[in-house]
Structures are given as structure tokens and as C-alpha cells.
Image (tube, rainbow, N blue to C red; front, side, top):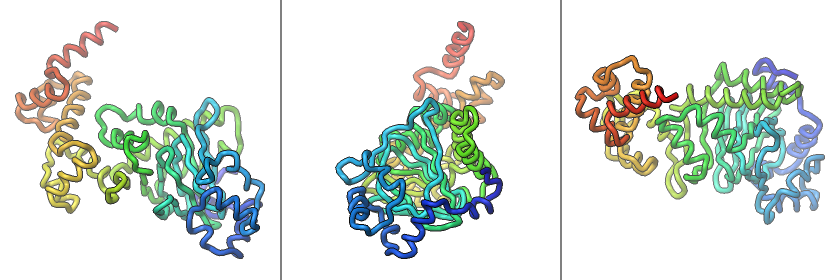
Length: 358
């Protein structure tokens, strides 16, 4: 079945398991769907007859570790990715996994539950969960359609982050989150009724349902396109929790994205005013979240942008210096050498030698 419009996603009929679970939800205490449960509690509830037993009730049984949660390591197969529709009215059993999960609320809403916190997801929200974060999803709405995209770290690294590397601070920040150099459990992108993500989700559902030749490869391509569009269009709206023990900072990615666009002319005071912060607070926030000062971040962006322009080979060094916001050429040379260890001219000469040697 290919769901062509959002209205059809909302009208997707419940399957037999969902009908059974909905009956339990209508009769039982709603608290069972409002808080995440460990597998040991879930298993005990089944044995005590307090929750509905379905054909998939034993799915997590051989995957739990110590009864606390469920651990799933990697996605099998050559594509290293897969998609599925979340089962509506299913019990929110805490689980984690070695792979990266992308949750897309294609229609309706759901709640993403963690051990000590939770947040709602509305239509269009995309949540990228970092590996090994203990979580569960609660979705008690007939009209909802929640798509789960699951990709191994190798897929995410080779097919997504490599496309965007080259000085992009947002990608570096996401790498810290997603590859456990930071304890933030997720990145949330509110996208609303985006015209591109919805059809891509529909195409994934279609491929997963019809399973035509090379459907797994097709799904991996669609996931890559989904992620690329997400970062291109919505990086300034991303919500990222802070490190453990700190307050949630919902604007840090937006600030970095703003700097990537306005690096050639903005100042600390102007950036702070734009986001409604005191300059000293913004400066401290950037140091805590990135380990870098405002000036260091600007200098890194300038140098990376300059290198890209130099690689194109159609501008003089003076023009490049002006374009990246260094109107004094000697100042540009000093910044470039401090970041790269060589002068801009030496960089150009090394690139030319590499090109001639090919």
C-alpha cells in the first residue's frame, strides 16, 4: 500500500495487533502508556495478566540485559538500514541499541520517553536518537503514523556525515552527540508539513511493503536523501539537549548554523542580540558546548570557507580574503596559517602539486 497523501496516513487502518492493543488501552489504566517500563516489569505484567499478550509480546525476551532494558546491536544485511512503522498502542518498553534510530512523526503525534524525561512529537518532528540511549515510544492515536528509520553507525558515517564534512560545525557537533563523545541522547528537528520529507517517508513505506528487487538498497538511498534534506533545510531549528548535568540548550545548533551563514560580518554582540542573550552568556555557552571561543569559531569557519573558494581556483587571494570577512590580507594570512600551519599561497601550491601528481 502506498500512502500518497498525509490524509491517507492519518486514515491508515489499525492492524489486528493494534486493534488488540487499543482494546487493552481503552479498558486498562492509561498510566501503562504514560511512563516507560523496563522489560522485567513488562514481562511480569504479562504473566500477571495485567496487559494484553500479542503475537509479538516475546520479541524482546531474548534481547534483554538484566531485565532493565533491551539491547539490540546492529541492523543485519548489506544495506545496514531498515524502516518500520511503529505499532500504535504498543506498550512503551525501554530499549536501546547499537545502531542509530531516526523517528519521524509523519502524521499525528507520539511521546518519546526516556528513563528520567520525555517530550511530545508532533506531525513533522524528526528525532535522531544516539546509540545506546534508553528510550521508548508511546503512540495512542489512530490517526498517527510514526516511521522508524534504523541505520548502523557505519551507514550514518559513510553515507551521511561524509557528504557534509569539511569544516561544518553542525556536523562536528552532531558527531559528538551520535558517536558518544557527548551524552546528549537525541537531536530533534521540527519540520512541520515539509513538502519533501513526507513523500520520502511514503516512498520508504512503499518499498518496505512491496519489497521489490533491491528494495533494501532503495530504502538506504531514501534515508540518505531524507537526512540530507533535513540538515540542509532545518539545521537552524534543531533542538539539542545539553550534556549530562547541564540545562537543555535548544538553540546551540541554531547559533552555530547562524554563524556559518553570517560569519563574514557578525560580531559576538550582534549574534547575542539576535538570539536574545547577553554577550557574556553567549560566549560562555559556546565555550561549554563546543570548547571554543566565539572568535575561534568564526576564524575556523572563515578558513574552511576560504579553502573551498581556493579549491575552485577562480578567485584571487585578495578577493577570497574579502569574501570571508578578512578585509586585511595580512590578517587573513595570519588566521589561515594559525589554523592550517601553512600560508594561503603555500596551500595553493600544495593543492596544485597534488593535482599535477594525479
